[in-house]
Length: 353
Image 1 (cartoon, rainbow, N blue to C red):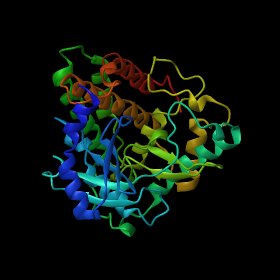
Image 2: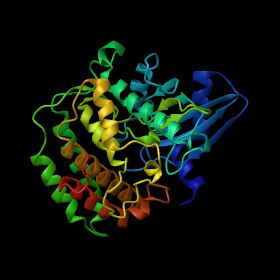
Image 3: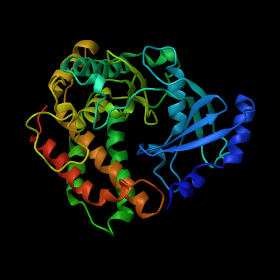
């Protein structure tokens, strides 16, 4: 399936043009570019006259709906506009599925760098790597210490029972994915991790606004130096819940010296360079800034790795059913078993904080 074919499934250009005219006023041209880097909701860059916009919508085809709630994402970003949490400027949200076939929203396009496997040359010093990392952990601390009621999010989600529901939800996501993928190959170790998680859910945990997918490549840094974090993206799983769930997920993407190798395709070597702090140093800074202690860290980090297993297996099902146009998705056949091995290694104490 080519890029243009999949884009046609995502957008009815004429219907979108009419919506933009009604919502933003007329413009001389509409240009649409499909952004291929995302792995959850779809991101499209729009030029509407002289305005640079971003459109977010769920993937085409069958999905696990709770993982692709773009209007929740819009509501949260819109609520955070005037806070010290950096988010893109919102434009409009649309729940009329007759426009492009799904819910969607528009925001202004931010400019800067998203770091994945490489860093901009301007950040390639120990000093700036340290500053970048501090800003990254400070922002998640700011999210977790924000009073949701102060921005009208006091009824977002249900924090009581959040952690138990997350475990059940991501086990359900895995079950959904394996309905199709088990015919290709099975991942029995993933179910061993699932059983352990169900048995080790903490009895008590804090309640806060949580992002749900906070990691280095879901934020943007401004042009120039010193590093300035200008936007946090991908809020579709945000809710009020257990902030330690965010930390466990974030740390899965932060390698340390001495970590065992599972051939993990999602472990970047970027943070192994001089100046990037260790996981323990990041958590120490977080605990100082929030006044919270990161308890039960083995559970939360194991869950973070399991969540990755489930998310990637969902990608594999979407690929098998022809509902994705992303070259990384077919690789999940081999990647998911390695990720499951890593999740089991964390619960087994082989990758300490």
